[in-house]
Image 1: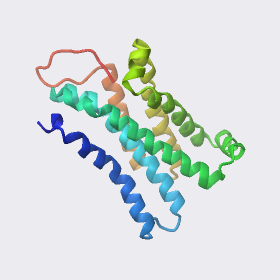
Image 2 (image 1 turned 90 degrees about the horizontal axis):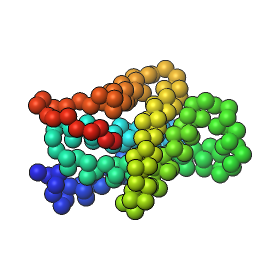
Image 3 (image 1 turned 180 degrees about the horizontal axis):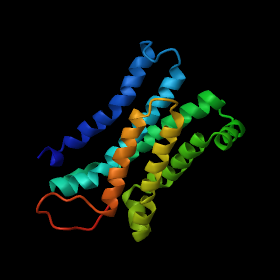
Length: 202
């Protein structure tokens, strides 16, 4: 099966870089619209949520299909999620606040949706730092407890998006429904027909 093949991870890497390549191409070909900074900020934020939801879906997908190989891509996708959220944050920090921490903090305090988004970003930092095997061994059982923060992060991210939009709630609404389904799976895992019960893991 292709999930176990040597070329599956390189293919997933390329797929994960396609959104970035698309934005770079658009930037060099006047494809970012009248407000390029706003377009880049929104696109990187959208892709952060998409990658986060895809990452969280791998465990249910493994349990439904019976293919444990889906988990091979979880760390990679989690790190790409952090990459896109870092781009999202840096564009906002550089373009909107000119690398001024004081201006940034004022914005975080004044605008609730910024508070939610920044909180989600901060919570993702320790998850990215501890995503390697050395930290998994060092933290032991605490590693799994720490990485359960991802469920709070996805809620904060969806709320950040919902609070940001002014009128069209369709896209954030879809993300919210998917997130709730994944959280419901965390409480009671969805199993493929005839599958035996197994411990729930992220």
